[in-house]
Amino acid sequence: HVGRQIHPQSDLTGGIGAGKSTAVAAFIRRGVPTLDADDLSHRLTQRGGEALEEIRATWGPGVISSDAGLDRAAMRDLVFRDPAARRTLESILHPKIQALAASAFAACNAPYMVYVVPLWFEVHGHHRPPWVWRIASITAPLAERRRRVAARSPMPDDVLDNILSHQVNDETRRL
View 1 (cartoon, rainbow, N blue to C red):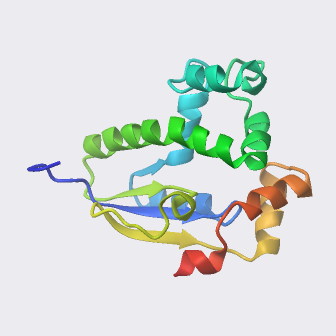
View 2 (view 1 turned 90 degrees about the horizontal axis):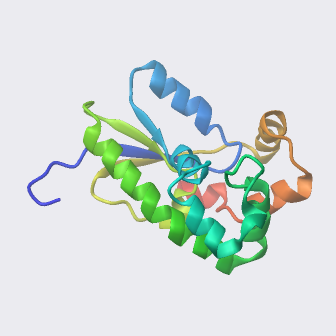
């Protein structure tokens, strides 16, 4: 990026059910452009998505849904049971997500952008690249997070517990 201005941004992160969507909606109402890493991941893993064939080649048809996209529940079960599978999935998706994000940053004409990366600390730790001005972490009491997840996308308690166990805690996010 020598000789090229990198678009300044803030990254917004938080665990499942923490309130990231509410925070993003507030930025959008104020005209701040936002980009969500989860949305990019969904684009890459939907029917015909750029990452789907590599995922199918790696794990077979058992992780492909009836609509020919990624079966998110099957993949979630796999990566939470097998850390090597999680690392493999990340090695497939993260470079592609970063490439799509870089294109979006370059195309953005606004002076500022919010990039939503739910698993920032799980993936990057406390490292902040020079083009990220701030990392904002959204937190909420665990009981509230559980209530929000149940209202949004009901799942068994053991599945939610497993997801929570793979995310850094709010205290770590605050450091």
